Length: 384
Image (tube, rainbow, N blue to C red; front, side, top):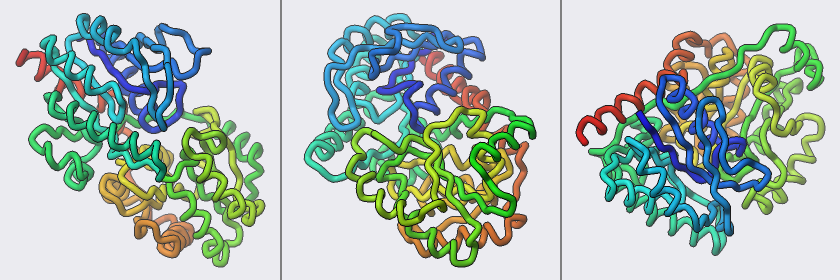
C-alpha cells in the first residue's frame, strides 16, 4: 500500500507528535508499505528529500512561522503531486496544512485518516490566540473531510471538546512505544555520568520545557517531597532552552528551579540509549501535564516498560496507562500538594506499583500500532 503521512514537524524535531509519527512510519515501512512523509524543512540544514529507515521524507521550505506553526507556500502543489501517488492519506493534526491536503485528497478520490494528536491549547497572547483559532478552523474542515479519526484512547475522545462531535468517526489506537534495550553495564555508566549516588531516589521527567507540561507543579511539589525523602532528586531530560514559544515560561521558572539547588538537574536532549538507561535508574517518572494538549503521554509507557512506576495528572487520556497497568498513581490536576503526596507514596512503597512489563511492551509495540492502522487503511481502500 502507498501511504502518505503529512505533518508540520518530523524527526529530528523532538516532540511527542514527531516521535509518534516516526515510529508509525517506520513500522508501516517495515510491514512492506511504501511510506512517504510530507513535512516542513524547519531547519535548512536538513535535506529536502531523503530515505530514513525505509521511509521517504520530503521537506518543504518554510516561509514564516506563526506561533508553533509554519507557512509553506509550496505545500498545496507538492501535496497534490504526492496524493496522486498514494492509496491513502494520513494527516497528523494540529497542522495548518491539514485542511487543504484533506480536501485535495477527497477531491482526488483518496481516503483520509486524521490522527488527532490533541486539542491545541497555546499560552496566552495575541499571536497564540490567532493560532488557536486557525487551528480550530483547520481541524473542523479536516475532520469533515476525514473518513476516520484516530485517537490514542476512547477516554480522550469522549472528553475532547472537539472530538465528541465526531463520535461516529473515532477509531482508538494505542500509540507506538519502544525503547532501546540496554545492558546492565551501560546502565551503570549512565549512573556514573549523572552521579547518581547509592540510596538516592530519582524522580525522572522527560519533556520539552513547555507550559502545558506542568513543570511548575513538580517544582512546587519537590520541597514537600524532600521533607520526607531528602535523598530525592529530579533528573529532567528534554529540551529546556530555546523552546519555541516558551521563553516567558522558562523565565518564570528559572528562579524557582535555582532555589532547588542540586535537587534539580537538567540533562538536555539525551541519546535514546541513555534515555532508556535513565528510565531504569529512576524510582518514579512524573507526568504533570495541565491541559488537553497532552492526550496520552507516551513517556509513561516508556517508563513502565523499564519496570518504573509513574505519577501522572488525572486527565482524560493521560490517566489511561496508570489505570490499565496499575503501575503508578494519579494526582489531582494542577495540585502540587496532591502531586507531592503521590510521589512520596510511590517512593515509599514502589513494590505496590508493579505490572506485566512484557504485556505492556506487546500492547504498545510500534508493530501493534501499525497493524491497527493497516486495518483502518485497508478497510477504506477496499471501499474505494
